[in-house]
Image 1 (cartoon, rainbow, N blue to C red):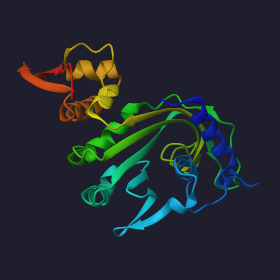
Image 2 (cartoon, helix red, strand yellow; image 1 turned 90 degrees about the vertical axis):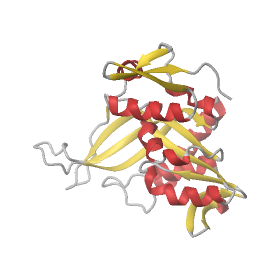
Image 3 (cartoon, helix red, strand yellow; image 1 turned 120 degrees about the horizontal axis):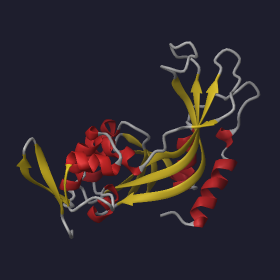
Length: 253
């Protein structure tokens, strides 16, 4: 959960961040993405602890034996880096931002003009991190590896460079600007993974029932179930027909 003070501090950092300013002709070009910059300042305002060289890698934030890495996608690319830190006794928290509320703005690549923003029909959820966790599932057994899901409101600037007539299909993102913090969800202990077990899910269920209740595609459901089994919250039962039955485990250490 995020307290009022955290939400207010996050909004202050969003407003103060110099990378957030737009140029007269559209969005400026910066070396560091704004979402990354804001999150880095939110977790550590002392810039002396930013961008630290360690064990042949560059760390987003380091304070003694504690490391924070901000990663928006492609966790699998971090495997060697994370393993090196964990094997050397560091506690690592991977911060993963999710657009719980997203506004879409289109940028004209010819003149830099920007359309009025429109609300995206899709709201991100904690389940967005599941494919990322699954890609590094062999590291999830490390007790010193934690995750923080940041549920945010963001503005998503996209370039009108696609292949369709309106240039939207096949377009690419230019920038994501954070606006506010809705909630923080930490995954530190096996019990924290209960957030991936919907409250209205029965104690015994099939994967298809889990997918429907969690409102996720079947591919995400199977990955989530594999993680829940690893964390001792679910067990895989006998096969019934063509599908396996899964069971919630009532308690975990």
